[in-house]
Length: 311
Image (cartoon, rainbow, N blue to C red; front, side, top):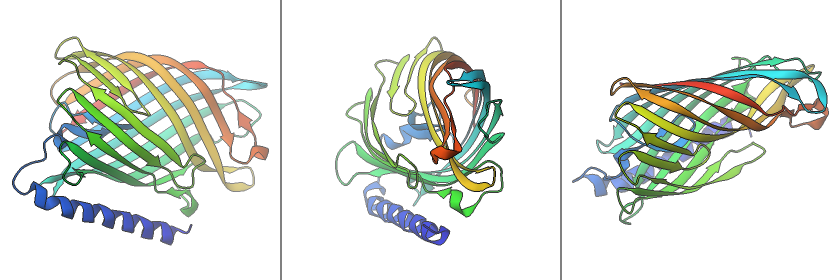
């Protein structure tokens, strides 16, 4: 698919969103949307419960994964992954929340195996998230999000590295404690083009939250107003277009899973940070073309520092 066709598709999808928002406008002229403003998209998460009402959110993390061996071959692979995401919430038609998202990633790879891997991987994304009432069904909402994504091994992105990841899901909130989520994520031109979004957010009391929505489920417990303990899982399935030897635009697949725990500290209503650690498993860095090679990285551990700022 050419860049022109992809941009055309992106415009058509945006038109679909606009039509949905227009249809919902009549329903929301007299009242704000109950339930909708309680949620937002967050870094690497489909949906989270809002703690504060801010127009802008800046989320960043730095994840350190020390060198681990490679199965079946000599050498080691170490990774430092840094990701930042800025989101801004606006009101379409003065009522409906629309979240604009800009994200960047820089991943440094230290590789001593025989397989040629890039020294770093990069990505830039521009996205839109919105939630609208789902027809006239009570307490049911439709959320849609899409992004223009460029991934490469440098900041000079090629047209072939352009992707349009999307996600569509329904939100049903029967009461203040429970939120059900069901939908799909669509990743055109990826090896896995569709993955399910099925889960729930359960808040039995003011201290405990179960956010069991893929791909980053989390259980958190607020010790007090500032300190929170959490356990978290994460699954990374990314693809980048890189240069491998004489071959350009080779697709490199990066896969891993995390399981860890940590502490989150809230300095004030705007600033909070977290520190977590845990294990990494099911790791692989491989080219889609098997002839270019692959590295099955052995299980290891990670540490992660995250900073969230609202303004």
